Amino acid sequence: MRIGISTSVIQGGRSGVAQYVFALLRGLKQFCHEHQFTLFVLENDLPLFDFVRSEMRLVSVPEKVRPPVQNIVWHQTRLPALARREQLDVLHIPSYRRMLWRKPCATVATIHDLAPFRVPKKYDWKRMLYGRVFARRLAHRQDVIVAISHNTAGDIQTFFNISPQRITVVYNGIEHDRFCPDSREDALGWVKTRYGLSRHFFLYVARLEHPGKNHVRLISAFEEFKAATHSDWLLVFAGSKWHGAEAIEAAIRASPFAADIRSLGFVPDPELPELYRAADVFVFPSLFEGFGLPPLEAMACGCPVIASTRGSLGEVLGEAAAIIEPEDIHTMARQLYLLATDSSTRNRLRAAGLAQAHKFDWQRTAAQMLDIYARACNCTTKATVPVSH
Image (cartoon, rainbow, N blue to C red; front, side, top):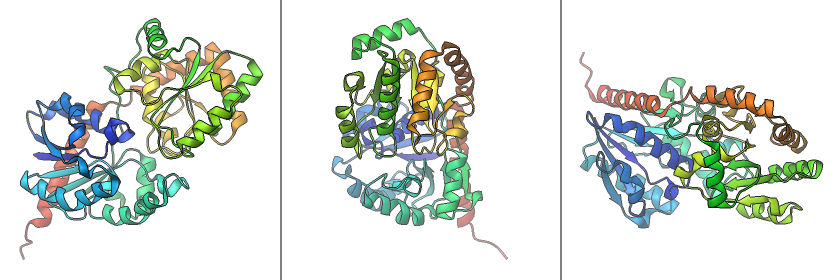
């Protein structure tokens, strides 16, 4: 098969979709001897794909189409022509915001979540309108829709009115060669040198997005924990700024424990395993997730996890996390206290998390996606064969 993948939605490598694309491509490399892969990549993002440059064809996309509106227009106008030029059998769009209307070949789209329907004011009104109105129509044009969880698949059926027969659930995976337990002593030395973290800390890896990622309530819960314990624990955020980041930064500045709240900014993907290993507890109080990869990565590295069950989190994390109601600050603070003071609970969650994380693997995910590409091609072939009477 000639398989094309659009990568221009990765936001410079600083998004969950970027991690999905990178990990999927690493998994698909095992099939490059049988199939031809063509990646459409924005000019400034080309170095991010050096890891597949020798196995996959990279087609440069002009940097001027990076902004969202221009990028949508490029997908609807220029990409179909490029797909025909490359004689693709199937084209994969890994984000519902860029699904194609015109079909130059078989099309597969990954929908990570339908957050605009679940979280009020998650995005600005233009993005909300696009997600609620236009994406719904575009979804009906795709040959196969991939949902990354059963929760997301249910939302696609409910809000997009897509029949379940056209939706395939393919879980995200874990790269177990990278996200795995290793020397905690080395990890602690690394975070001390790299980020100046030399005390016990709670870690939250997520872009600084308000209100969806729920940082502000976590700050309040941390304040309650600090006031009750007088401990020297830190709260550490790792993630780039996104919509509403100013509200999070204001909450940090206003906190009586501002000196104990650290915001590291975007942490490069290669550094994440060491950060997870060094953290004493990983906290993920998100109001909604289509999958929830960071807490699963933390589990794979042996870090005990506190998380909400909103969206797909309950489905993905199972019983391996300490559960919180993300809008209940006092319950959140009690879980922070429990995990900070009870080593037996941390050890129990650490063992449960490792077992849960091993249920997910990017190699298996990539193999499932390859089957989906073949199925999409088969659907298109059948649709174009004349029916004889």
